[in-house]
Length: 355
Ligand SMILES: Cc1cc2nc3c(=O)[nH]c(=O)nc-3n(C[C@H](O)[C@H](O)[C@H](O)COP(=O)(O)O)c2cc1C
Image (cartoon, rainbow, N blue to C red):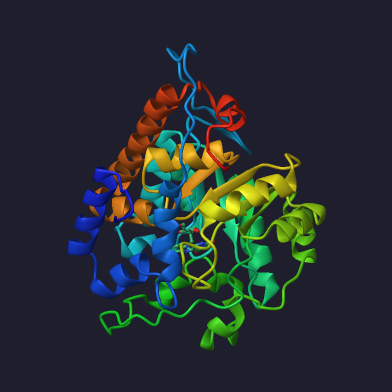
């Protein structure tokens, strides 16, 4: 059986495939390596079975979330790169759509719109995703701008010492990404000499270690969420090093192929951190049932990557808002059927068999 996908997301996906430049479509939608992890991430959520409660008053369902900001829903937008290749308004539209839905929005370091412009459109709390660049001064300058623009948390991505290769043939044509677009937030922090070969300075630094968490906390004063965690022992070490939250993710199956699915890594990590910090998750979330399962396994919030890019490509800010509203509505419905009324209730109800 194909992994379940909400019909609205499937519609956005088809429209995006028809409308996007094929190399960008391939870039967004494919996984790395031989594509094992990307498919498994989607199907793993449906491998769990639920244990619904009955005779509870479920006439009022509340999906509100407090997590480095107040949100109407625990369904958020994961950081993804290069939104102006999906839609003219780029990250400004994504942020506006997420704000209208009351969702957490995480702006990628690889945004194709200036941080300050996205912040002005966000109209709600947002977080900034960080790659630590080979020239650390570039990261530091961008973090300081994100803080000044109002970010309420940082998400430090730790699963990308190198960008995962894709061995599945695509369209064969490179993506139409000019340096002007790719460097929109970075060029000003590079010297004239560095600009001759920018990627030698702005690619991810593969040598970073645990001290990066404290460094980011110190330069920003913001809570640092560590994104890309798949092992309980890593999660514990990151919390000990000062992480304010742990983000379980396999980068959408785009980094180490055959990495465990986030759906299966989540319970061990929730147990390992033992409630000391919140745990959030992404990877293959395509229905309100997936969201319910993730929250039932102990996640505080759940993020979508590709569906938001497809929705943006298909219908701009309105598409992103509709996607998040629809997943939240399906979540609300299945919370009622499962006998839980709010997120704390959901997390503590023992709703997921084997979770
Ligand atoms: C096109 C694309 C670009 C991405 N860019 C980033 C990025 O810049 N920073 C980051 O931390 N994660 C990035 N990710 C990973 C997402 O944040 C997220 O972990 C993943 O997409 C979740 O899986 P899903 O696409 O199945 O929902 C990217 C993912 C995609 C699909």
